[in-house]
Image 1: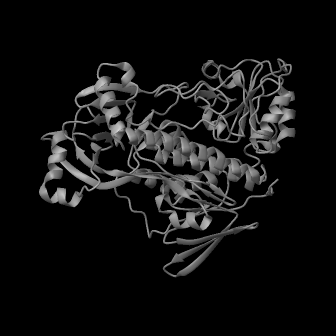
Image 2: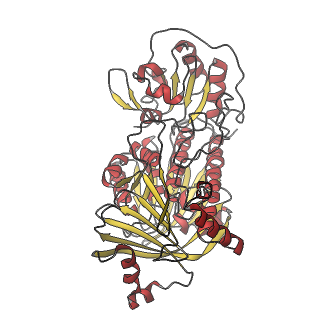
Length: 568
């Protein structure tokens, strides 16, 4: 067993980009002091960069106070259209098993996202931001982490219990110090990105992807709407593409005109990228966790970069908080690596398959692409093989050691594009409106992110569940009768919940277990706390039934969210 802390500690976050910002804010939400370092002198808010934010990520940001504003300011879209030349192949829409208050995707520049996160950080007394601190070394021992920085006024040393490295793709030196490899591949072709301000009717609420359009033959073009009548256009270009030469010759203007015609426009930002697919072999090295692009880089087709990085941040934050508060053993942190590394590997596989379709590496791949795209105009089976990027979606922790297997709710694999699996252990709980005692309204995932949440069916004895939960773990925990918070039955239907069941929800709103026994609950809670065995079927026993009055408060004052310093 690893060391268990008995009181709060500190965390240093290296990298003040959106993943580092999110990590710092989530840790502060759990009451953990954070030092946030960045080697830059100040923020450089230029260019759209990562623009496409997925619904579940907006909900994470909502927990730290920026999700709703991002959704309101951004361009919302619920349709992704894919074309081959001038033929539309399919239009993908998105299905929500719950009733989320957020749209499937929102487009907003990374610069604005960072600005809103900065504003929240400035309001927090627990986050110490230090620009101009270039990290030169990270050392650690049993007592904590020591980070040495180069600054204009000389070397500085910062000590903390743990560190999260979220320096983006610039993290090669730190990875080498930690002994972490970063294997993968790079793609020969480049991608030209231009943000243009223009009035283009009909393009404002959908993503458009074009294979082999006449204005970029043999390659692709991706068009995303952004706020303030701005459009992000990505062209696949040859590996030897020269942006400066194209600007000088006027060919860049001609390139843009082929898409937008005679419409007046202004280039807001432009850049050229070569994309990579790489993943660290370790995302946890003792007291140091790697997150975001410091741990994994994927191509942008599918918007899986920043969205996955925010999921890293949430996973790391609640586990670090549980360990630092003494609610869980240090071994819980190893599940950060196992869960998020598995997510990174899946993202690499998904995006690499997309890139192989977009940028074929062999004659066989070229032939396959031509045949599929030609047939897809009229053949639905061929259409299903067209890969323009599977859009960002959560990773499902089906095989995690924190998840309790439920044979009655097996995972049948990834659903169709735009759909989410049925509610089951390892899946994010569907979000729906809920009503708290006293008539206050909120959303399920909002109360789920305050600790461990137990949703109890009407036929379950609250007294037995309360006693079992208190004995099993010492974490922030809430127990609520499902029927009390779900007055219209929407949540019960979305879960497929039965009266004799208890649903165990993780602090990141994933379903950890569904059980109808006290023994099963104890086992699931201990497993979720990092002290149980790997995911296995829960043994069957008689259900505990008792029509006691509704119990909607915290399990006990001493372990309620407010009294033990859970999220604010």
